[in-house]
Structures are given as structure tokens and as C-alpha cells.
Figure 1: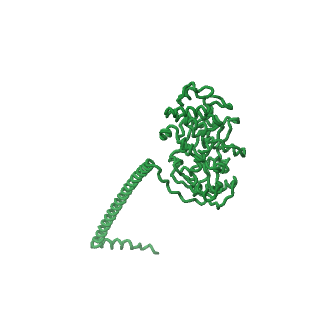
Figure 2: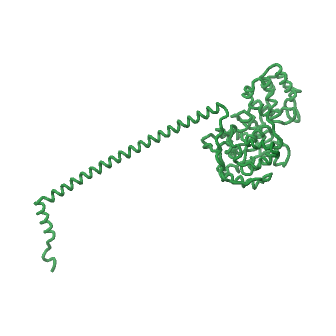
Figure 3: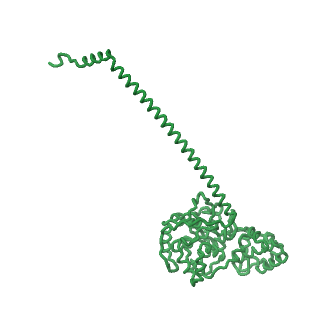
Length: 451
């Protein structure tokens, strides 16, 4: 590889997934906590949910606006495959493009040889394209050893693997759980990278202290220990539901399943206030081989109407879980039954709010600084607006007070004038005689009033 940045821009973080060293036992322990009712991982007093946004971050590719893989697409023509891989159309024929166990695809041996030839010839674009397809077929969507089937090729051509990767994760674990055993077929390094991103670093250091069992490392963890929000979960917009479903239908290689973003609000940096209302509304699961209700077509149609939730709908960023939600999880875990002994006391007390994560890059820092300055300007504007409103109200009050004072002064003046007038009239002798005559006449009674 001569330029990792260019490869990442074209194909995402596929090389990072190649370097992931999946520790023995961690995924086998994780799947013991899978909740087949709510399609998440339920621990003693908290839940974790793999999301489209997190998988998109770790894969390094966005969720496309178009419909995701559904298995019903027309097979790409050999010429299209050859062009994408910088091959000759004559290369996409037998014995390289063949059928194995009922699946059509390309042999890994042929692609390895082509990648080697392109590397020696320093044909970087061609080499990287073939390498990316090998990762799609052997790591992201494994089906058979040393064979890249047509489904992996379709995903490689559309560059929209994230919904299918998440679907395969849920579907494989759910099917394995319902059968009470078996292998789960999904991209293990991706699932490991997701789970590890939520665990504290102390969990990985316990091996040096003699605690090698993953169950003994995970069971003591409290909600305060979990890394809820990180770069992969701090999304400003999420896919909340699709079509007729109140949650998100996922279409995988072998079938479909729904998952509930409402259970992941804590991971998005939003509060978990209580049991989400949509949990019991749709928790479908089907196998392609047993899809008698034609659920796959319902899932396909649902993706034609995607509902995204932005910051306004999600609300203020406050990553905490309310006591009512935590208590509901505790009750659910008790009913569900934990697979390992619990070495600690459970409490539904709300943990302290975590501090905001520091920026990882200068670009992220500058973005946060710009957001802070923008919010500061908004608040300054609101403050100045309130000051102006306050000044206007105080001006009205002062004017009314002044007008009231003037009225009181005028009333006092008029009252004084009336008192002076009455005093002058009381000193007039003519007026006094008239008053005495008036009262004398008023007090005289007729002679016949008393017999």
C-alpha cells in the first residue's frame, strides 16, 4: 500500500478491520447477553445496541441514501465486474468466475494472483480494488473458504455494506440463540471493535492481574463504567425507523431482522428517560428459506421511506439513563436471566453525567470551537433582545408612574382650591343669614302636626 489515505477514501477503514486482533472468548461471552425479545445486549442494569451509525464509523463508509442490499437485485454483468476490478472481460469467465455449492462468484486464488500481478506492475488502483473485494468476500461477508460469492461482489460494487453488516450481526446471533448453539456468521472483527469501544480500558488490563475470564471482567461493570459516547456514536442524525415499521428493518444475506434505535439513545448522547414506547411494536425475524409471509418485500419497501431524526428531534445532548429506565432494565434482566453470577449490587440510581469527550483532531476541535462561538452569538443576541424588552417595559412603568404622580398633584391642587372656596363662602355674612333662615324654616312644624 503506497497511500493509505486514498485507499480509505475509496474503500473505508477495511485495512483497520484487518488489523483487529479479536481476543479469545470475548465474543462468545458477549452473545450470552443477547436479548432475543428486544434484539439488543441486555446486561444486569444497562443495555448495549450495535447501531448503523456506529458500524458506519468503524467501516468508514456512510449508509447510502439508496436501498441497501436485499438479495433480489439482478446479477451484475461480467463486464461491469471486470471494469470495477480493472480486469479484462475475458477474465470473468470459467474457471475463475464459477459456481461453488450453488453460489456463483470468483475464486480467491484467482484474485490473489491478480492482486500480486497488479502490485508488481505498480498498478495501485487495480491492486486496491482487488484487495478491497477480497476483504468484502473473505472478511465482511464470509460464505465459503477461498471463494467470493456474488452477494459480496454486489456489495462491493454498491459501496453500501453497512446495513447488511449490521443485519448479518443481529440475524446470525439471533438465529444462533434461537437454535441454542452453532456458529454465528458475521464480521467478527467489526463486532469486536464495536463492543471494545464501549468497554473501559481497565477491562483489557485485567488479564495481567490473573482475571482471564471475560465473564469475570464484564459482570462487575456498572453503567458508570461503560463508555457510552465516543466518536462513533456522537452522530447529529440517525436513522430512526423505516416505512411501516416503528424501528429499523435490516436485510441480511440469509434473512431479515429489526433493531431498536430507541434503545441506543444513551449511546447517541441523549437521555434514556424510560422504557421506549416502540419496543413491542415490531421485532420481526425471518429466514430467506422460510419467508412464507414475504417479509423480505415488506423490508425492501420500508427502506424506500426512511425516517431520520436530527438534533431537534433527538433533543439536548445529555447522556444519562433515568432511574425508571434503569429499573426497567434490572427487571428485564431478572426475567431474562443473566448467564453468569452477579458480583455486585444493582441500583437504579442515576449515575453522574460524564464529562464531554475531548476532540481527537484539529478539525474536530475547530468544528467544536466554531459551534461554541455560534452558540455564544445566539445567546448574546437573545440576551440583548431580553435587555431591550426589559428596558421597554421599565420605560412604560416609569411613564405610568410619572403620569400617576401628575394626576395626584392635580387632584391635590383642585382639592385645595375647593377647600379655599368653601372657607371663603363660610365667611360671607349674607350667606350666613340665608343659611340660618333655611335651617329655621326647615325645623318649624305646622300647628296641627301634634293634636
